[in-house]
Length: 264
Image 1 (cartoon, rainbow, N blue to C red):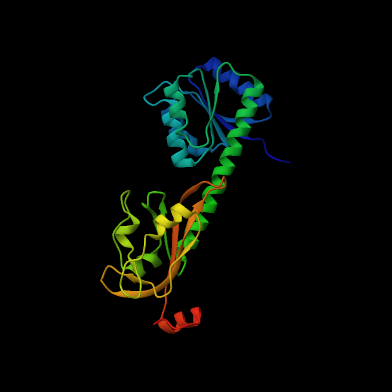
Image 2: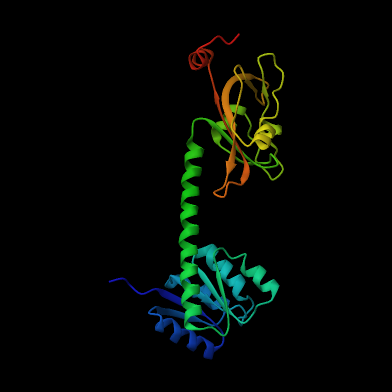
C-alpha cells in the first residue's frame, strides 16, 4: 500500500492553518508538521522532511515565505505550493524565481489545492529528471577524450571540457565574457586563419566540418593538426540556442588513414 503524501504547512494564521490541515487530510494526504514562521520551519524541517511544503507568503518573523521557500529548496530540494492572498505583480515575479513552485490565491477550494499539489509534484519530478540527465551529460562530456566547446548564439563560451583545455593549452577560467575567438584559432595548411565556423553555423544552421589539413594554434604558440566540426544546438521546439565544437588532435599517419588521401 502506498504511503500518503507527507505535507508541511507554513502559515502564521492559526485559523487558516487549521483549514489547510483539514483540506490536506480530506485529499488523503498526511500533515506531518505545521509552522508559523520562516525561522521556525528552517530550524526544524530537517528533522522530518515532507514530500511537499504549503507556504504562506506573509509570515511572522524576519523572512517572508518566498525567502523561506528559496532556502528550503536550496538546502532540501523540496517542491513548494504558495497559498497566499497576495496577487500583485512583484509577488508573482518573486514567486517565479522559486523553481517549479505552484501558486494559488486565497480563498481556495479543495480542487484548487489538489491541482496545485499535483502540478507542483509533476514539475518537481520533471525538473529533477532534467537535472539528473544534465548531470550525466556533463559527466560524459567532462570525460570525453575529444575537445568540446559550447557557446551561446553570441559566441560566448558556456562550457569547455578538460580535453579541450588540454588540447588548446588554456587554463584560464571561463567567465561571462569569454568569446570563442579568444581561445580557438584554426588555420589552413598555409597558416591562414579559417573563416569563423561559428558564424557560418549561425547563418546556415547546419554542421560545419573543418577542412582537411586544419591546424589549431595553441596558447603556447605550437600548432597541431586537428579534425572536427561545429554544429548547432537546437532545443525541442527547433529553436537554435547556441553552437558546439567537437575537435580531435590527429597525427599525420592517422589523418592520412582517415581521409585516404595525401595531406600535402
